[in-house]
Length: 199
Image 1 (tube, one colour):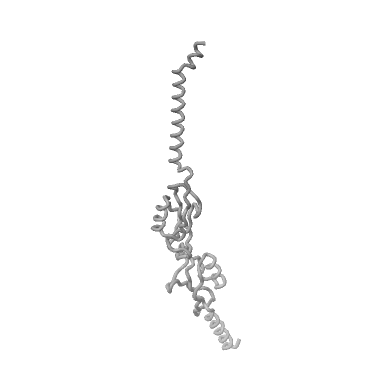
Image 2: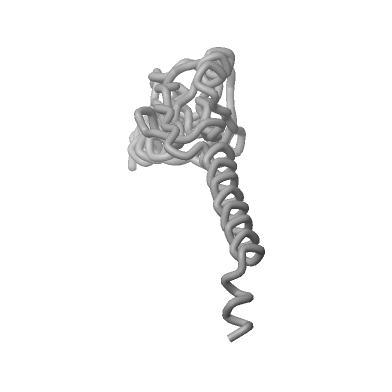
């Protein structure tokens, strides 16, 4: 009985009320701190950074309280300026919190370089699809007197190039092809020799 009276004494009740008030205050402070540190409820729309240079990106994201990081370079796209933003994550229009990092991929300065395949000594019918398949374009096709009708030489911007060398994808390659005329001359000479010998 004395214990129950002790529990409901003024001193105990005051202590309990004080402890409860402190607990409520600590809970309120904790929630307030979490709201500030996690930017609870704050929404910032991600701007469209497509085709922007890095200078413009920095200015735009700084105004929006956002940051950026460069991802690996993407494949070259001729529709975008060099070194401009070609891809972004998150995409434009998404909502994020303050100080969120936006990941960017930049357009390279040009197409990647690729090796010229081994095509010399093959016919034009074989060479054309091979060069087109790896990403080159066929330019001027010139004929040269030769015993065969095979591709004899490759040229890029007027200079001779050889299989194994690397040039930019989509480069225009000129072909020099044998016309087989020397073979026909030899055949005619052979016919004349036969006629001369009475065969």
